[in-house]
Each structure stands twice: as C-alpha cells, then as structure tokens.
Image (cartoon, rainbow, N blue to C red; front, side, top):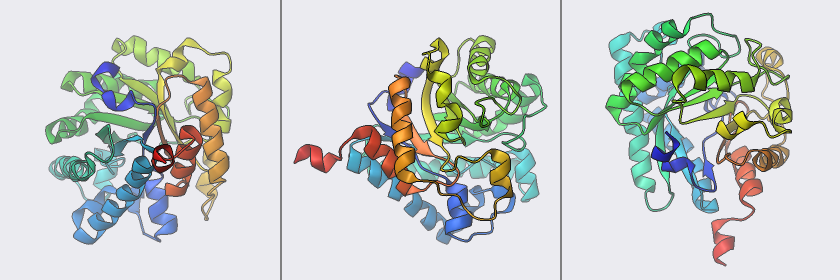
Length: 317
C-alpha cells in the first residue's frame, strides 16, 4: 500500500502537534470528552483551527518538508460522540466536513508545501490509555462508519491513533480494506515499550500484518516519549521497517502520571527534537514526524530542525 501514498516517501514529512492539549492548556478551552471535532460547528472555532494548522504548515514550508493534515476527529466515533449529542447522521456529517475543511487548507498550500495529504483520524473506541476489550470483528463493525465517511469525503487515507490492543487495530485495518481506504495504524506504548494490553510493539505490528494480509500502509507510534520505546529498535528488528511515523509526547511521564496532572508538562522541545532525530537513525523508513500530548508548534519546529538540519531559506542562500 505504501506505493499508493507518495506523501510518506519524501525525506521529511511533518504533522501537527498535540491539538487537544493545546486547546485545554494553552487556549483554556473546556473540551468535553476531550473532543476537538465540535470546533468545526462554528466559524470562530474553525478560524482558530485554520490558524493552528497553518502554523504547522509554515514549518513544513520553512524546512522544505511535506505535510499530512490530520482531521480533528479523534473522538468522532459513536461512543464518544453520544456523550456530546451526536448520533450516526451527525457523526457522518462532521467527519465528512472535517475532511472538506482540511482539504481546503491543503489546496491553499499547494505549490508551497509538498507532498501534502489529508488523513481522516480515528481514535480508539474507549480510553486510549487502556486496552480495549472488543474482538477484531466488533472493532471492524464499530469503526466502519467513520471510515466510510472519510472515503465519501475524499480523504487520502485514514490513520488510527493511540491504539492499545491488537484486536482493535486488526478490526480497523479490515474495515479500511473493505472500504478500499488506505490505513495507517498507530500504537501507543507504556514506559516499558509495551501496549496497554501487555503485547510487545513488534509482536503487535507482526500480528496486525499477519491478520490483515499486510494491509496497513504503514505503522506509527504516538502518545509516548522516545525514551519509552527507542530501546526496541537497537537490534534492528525486521518489523521496525514498517514504522514510518512517530508523534511523540513532550513528557517522559507515564500515561497514569499524565492523567493525574493538573498542569501541562511541556518537556524540553530541543531535547525531544534530538531524540526523534535519534529514532530516524535507527528507523530507516521513518519519514512522518509530529507531536502528541503536551507538544505544540515549537516542538514540531525543533523536530524538523534536528531531522532536516537546515531550513529552506538556508539551503537556498
């Protein structure tokens, strides 16, 4: 599938940062269910989202990198949507609208940033820090409607973030395959590099590929600090070649510790950039880089600088 997604084949492709933590801690927003997708419902919030994405796209232009625009739909699934009064029809509408919104941003940046793509974002059915209990078949049925909305809306691919179980990942990949949509699977890991289910990252990737005929276009790791999983790649395992993306947390704290904090741990942006650059030296396929919880455009800028080593302006000087 990767050959059908040229946006990941460049030397450096950037992504955005911790949207939800930026809204809560930097913008002081009340974010029920930790859901960002309701911001698409009014013009003032859409304008804020536009500025948020543009700030990151400016970094891509500065560093001569590509970009993947993630829709703000991590919580736009039935269980979380129901908490906010969204039924099936409303979720279909908002997921399609999210793709259209991001597609318009991509169009404005065409010629300035490239390659550029829009990814429809899927989140876990439950808490991303806990292992889901659903079977692969149940997960396939559950996530299929959101994937169908992304397909109808014209997304370039779908990306499932913060997954903690193999079964949910397999179900999402199967639903994407049935819909003919390219899919990226992103696992989150604990401080020991294992999924919340206890499964090793390598075993999880290998299992998903085995159960889906290798359908995922690529795998990612998100919502974890590089200190939590860099050690997994020291011996150059074969499965590591399937990892093409990382969206790292700013903090070195565990998920449990982060859940208990009332203030944001922004970590050290420069150090994070250097650690992500270290991951690239161990992972030859790693091209897609962004931030997750606690990060903002500063962290992505440091990641880009550490991994690119120069800006576009400097290269043309």
